[in-house]
Image: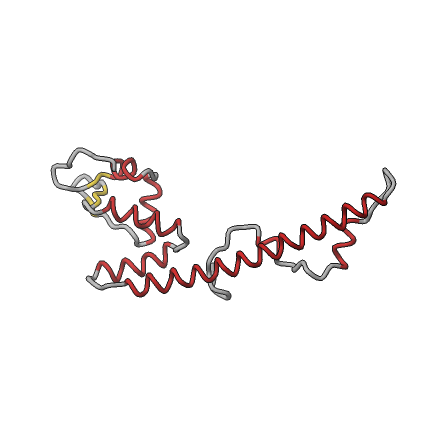
Amino acid sequence: MMKRSASHRGFWAIGELAKATGVSSDTLRHYERKGVLHSQRAGNGYREYPEDALERVRMVRQGLAIGFTLDELRSIFKVFDRGGAPCQQVRSLAANKLAQIETHLQEVIALRDDLKNALDDWDKRLAKTASGQRAGLLKTLAARNGVHSSSSLLLRRPSLKKKGQKA
């Protein structure tokens, strides 16, 4: 854990907090705009983050790492900051994300298997094709039933948004 010299009023300056959390000042300002982090202004106009901001930024970073969005975290923190217990909401969101990841994983596995089959077929076609002649490998894709038009999207990390939900 990174230690810092205590501010005379118990607040973090933006540069201090950025350094302690390993994120940029711009990221901290973005977190503020999204409502997951709060600051107040000092007399000189500089941002001052409360003592617990280090823990908050760490929670945000870890939440993002497991798939939560900033909007979801804002909703959770709003309940928490008002003294509520958002634990069931957190649990439910995480369970939904796991289900989406499991679905995505099965789709990627199916895509992998289809690609393996295509490669096996293509190797056989290439072995029967004279050097310099076309084997028609891409044309064979049109006849395949296993590949769906959205398969290329499967190779990207899932957005973890529900179907029909705007980005």
